[in-house]
Structures are given as C-alpha cells and as structure tokens.
Length: 435
Ligand SMILES: [Zn+2]
Image 1 (cartoon, rainbow, N blue to C red):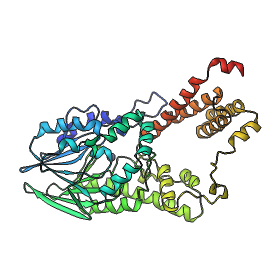
Image 2: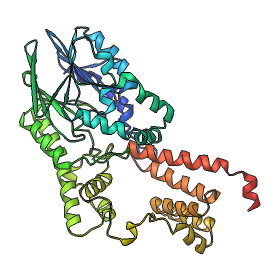
Image 3: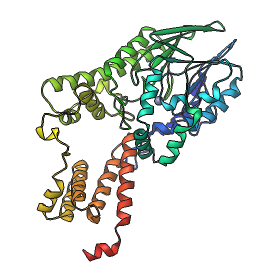
C-alpha cells in the first residue's frame, strides 16, 4: 500500500495529528489547509495517483492516455498539475468533474487539451448558473470566512479560465472505455444536485466527490446554499455501497481501502445522516422549534463521525428550514423586524451598554459564552462604540474559539473578532474618557 508512506505528511497537512494535551484550547481541523505542505502526489495504485488539496486531484493512467477526476481550486490547481504531470505527461483524454464547486473545477483550464472530453452530470450548467447568479453574495461570505480580500475573490471569479463547459453530460449513467479500462459514471446527488461518482470496475475503485468526508458533512454550509437533501446523500451512498468497492476515494481527505473498512465507514456515515434527518423530522412533527432541536439532537456514540467539518446543529437547522422554510409560527416573525429589534430599548431600561456588558462577562465566565455574546450584541445595539461591550464580545468569541475543533466555526468566530476589534480601534481613549 504505497500511499500509506505519505500518511504522516497528509496528517500534518490536515493538522490532525493528536495534540499533546498541554493547552486548554481544542485543536482546530481546517480542511481548507489540506495538502499545503505536500510536495508529491500519493500513489494509490500503479494506475491511480492523488494530489491532496482542497480538493484533491486524481490522475488515472491507461495505456491509451489519462483521465483526470476533479482539478482542485484555482489557487492549488497549478501545483497539482505540476506534481501529477511529472508522474505521466500522456495525453489527457477525459476530465471528469464530480460537481460544479470551485474547489473541483479550478484547474480544468490547465488540464484541458485539444480533444479532451469534459464530463459532468446534466445539472452541472444549472448549478453553475445558480452559483453565478448569487456570486456577489457568495464572494462576501467567502471573503469573511477565509479572511480574503473581497476584490481578489471577485477577480478570481471573473477570470475567463474559470469558465467550464462540459463536452459530455448525462442524466443517470454514462460509461466509456479507455485503454481497456472501463469507467462507469453515476449521478449521485448529495452535496450538490449535479454530484456524480466514478466507478472503475477493474480496480473496484469508487471516486465519490464530496458525498463522503472524514466528519459529519456540511449538510448546510454557512457560506450559503440551497438545501442539501439528506435522503439524496443516503440513496447516493447506497448506490456506491452496492458496487462493493475495495477502494473509495473522496475528493477531500484520504482514500479508504479494503471492502470491510469501506462498508463500515460508508454505512456509519450514511446512518449518521439518516439519524439526524429522522430526529429532525420527528421533532418537527412533535411541534418542537428549530433551536430546541439544534440543542437536543446529538449522534449516539456508535454513529459518532465527528464534527470537524460539518456540524450537526447547522445540519438540523438546514434540514428543518429546507423542509418548511423560515416561518416559526410567531406572528412577530411575519414582519420586517428582527428578533433583536427591541434590544436597544431593553438595554436602555437596564441602565445602559456597560451594565449589560458586565452581565455579558458574568455569563462568559460562568461558561455561557453564547449567551454572553448575545448580551454583548444587545449592548452594542444600544451603543455600537461601547468599549466594555466590544471587549465582552471579543472575549465571548475567543472563548468559543477555544472550545471548537471545527475549522469553519473557528473561521467565522475569527471574522467576528476581526470586526469587533476594528470597531474597538475606532473608539479613541479620549472619547472613552469623556463619557
Ligand atoms: Zn469540495
């Protein structure tokens, strides 16, 4: 198993080596950093190579030319291309895109040659068009989540080399043969409506795109997404299991090798999704509100697949609102007035922002950082430049950061800290003294 040689490097690249338990803070697992340190691709078999990244690029060799499965994100694609072309510079006959997210399509322009076929599922163009329509929104959330310059993100998105036109699309199944190797491609909707999986019967290998992570999936992503339907993930993972693969290659993370390990991992993952779906639906039918279910629903120990990437609470809300939308049966929610609309008046009645900020600190110190954060936000609704409230807010956000391994949660907390700190920097000590 040659790829195991690189596992240590890969673990380092994922930041998921076990920590020496000397600090209170949780070790953050940031999937977006995967592969940053990797200098060469992983040899999975004599014919399959993987360049690790956010996401992975796979190269499949055949005697009549090569097939590329996914091409990573624009910032990483060139390095993947360079590494994999050193393995083989034979013609690229096919590029298969597991779906239309930018971390899979970023390097198509590098790999595409005269005569290269680009295969995608038939929903790919509509999914790309949807992303394009709300690109302004997604640029804002991506800039905040990854601390990128919004102008740089917009420029990357506008780049003509990021436009991708599939030359072959299909509805349910497409197959071709190259150099005596058969490739079967199935529609497996899950993370996106255009998601596909690639099956190479000869190697018993299934490439499953983003339908399988080494964590609970991002069934709702904070970046913004239409509903990702749990029952579609489950049906798609069943399709993969029915093939009885010896090797499963997700587009993020490590391959899973061995039929027993594959069955165990994929079944557990699928059952975890099913459990969260069923518990959410049950709670909805019992009349429970979304926040109660976000708090209550936890995976039982035998289905615990971790929350380093997706979080169960976010998925619960995604499933709940995916089914029934945003109305919560409170008549006040019918109107253009947020639940926090009365905060400024309530803070004034309580005696002002600094008094509420003191209550916020009290809650944070008692281990209720989320409540402390809400109190600090209320104080700031009353007085946006109140130093005590800004400091309490930063303290709450830092406490929450210390308590999470989830890279996405960590990033959004960092965004909150940067924003509050920038506001705090505008509060001059003079202004403060004058109060
Ligand atoms: Zn991806």
